[in-house]
Image (cartoon, rainbow, N blue to C red):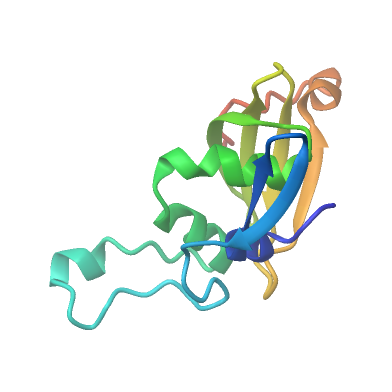
Length: 141
């Protein structure tokens, strides 16, 4: 099942023994709220909050990098166990392009739209390679 990025942040799928799955609430509070620094945070901490105009992308950036591959893999393919995430860059429409490498060796590009739901588009990197698109290369402006 494909989910929007905001939904993926709101719930974490936990694979249990025997190939059964359970969905449990994520530790991310109020995943649909915009990223903002706490009013009690120091000026340096408030300045470090990323705001790109893409709320879902900003939320991803606010999480520890160790979680990026797992969340992107969950969006890309139910069979992908993400081992590496790569931020390619932002499009002019503020869509964020990420790539995720799976444990099985396959990879996907995930484009996160700058809309209210953080909708995503997913493409197989093997297919994109036939079009001379390298999923693990920075976008050029």
